[in-house]
Length: 557
Image (tube, rainbow, N blue to C red; front, top):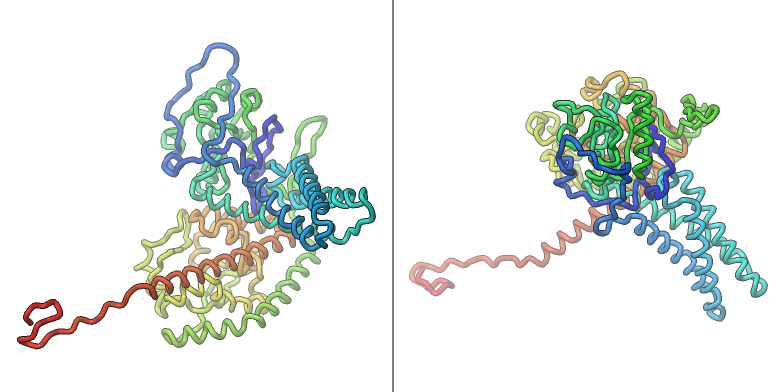
């Protein structure tokens, strides 16, 4: 998705930029927590029109955040925590004779870093939505803080610089780590319809319907459409939302719905309507975004190329250098070999446990579609009962996936007890390292689809087969638990269209982190259950009395 965002005073901090495929973050100072019921039903007051008010044009006043929804404060708090840990370690590891002095220098370094981060826009959407730009500016801010520490030391005499440089490096690592974790937390909260930002959708056509589907099925993006500017369309999904037909009263509709932004669907409006809509939105103090309808092109390939002040967008061609593909394949071979050797004992123990629990087979081979549409055998440790494939009809009603041929059931009765553990820790996926070594798969790529699933794919989605399927991929780290098929489609095609070595590295890092978190969570749950089971008293067997004797209750047997 490509958008043009206005630079208006009071820009929402980290308000959603969806175009960056990995780790997109969207926050705003006037974010509000939308209750699940309201968010699911579309929310907002119902009404067909907004009465025109007398007087001057209405200027929308931003609604302050409700509850504890000021996400910028949380993000700043995480930055302070990370900087404090890095510079505090530097102070505490030095001789105690200069502890107070170096502690003061550390405070100056922290304040200088935070000021540089604020000046660099690290609490605004246009920076935090782009991970590479965010990282560069965090590094620059840390250099400022490190220089402040060194200068303070030089003012009082000779000072070594190795320690401050180490602290500055640690500060960069901790800040980026906590910001990444914060992004994951925000996305999880938004998936539950919290911290959503209300916007108006200006213009109605097929592009608008696609935008509605995107926001409605992927709430983790952070948007909630609260009002419509355009003709009411019977049977449309936004039929019950407040709406106006003209673009002159956008500010009034925003005030009615509590929206603080507007998204103009450019293809749905005539040139004069589009100009009026944008001017009215800016006049009302709304945060304006324009959706040109360029599906299939992310911000990685789009550059602003103005001609005599006219904002034209330049779309770079999709190309991958041969040396990059060679590096990707070399990385696959090295990492698959190293991880395979290190995890071989673990796979052996898991295979033995499967054999002892319910017999053979230990491995499960499934026919899937690989690169260029060629069928491949994908290996996994068996986590289901041996006859699981014959039980599909019985579990069809448990499918949680929507709008496509994919299948997932959280409480699938075909999964064994051991299988639940293997899936939670991703140990069942380790045999696919062999697929990577023999060239049928890659470490990162679109997840290999089953043959019957591909039968339902259109020609556009089949472009996912241009690359080797992967053990992990963009969809797995961004929307693994999202039941929407549109998220699966969008993210797989986004990976194919915008692949880079940096994107692969980010996906691998996210996957490693998620695997560790899920494994620790699973082990903690098992330990808790075992502790609760050990505390449960075992009932003593009741002895039956012989005929004519008194039973333990005192009654005659």
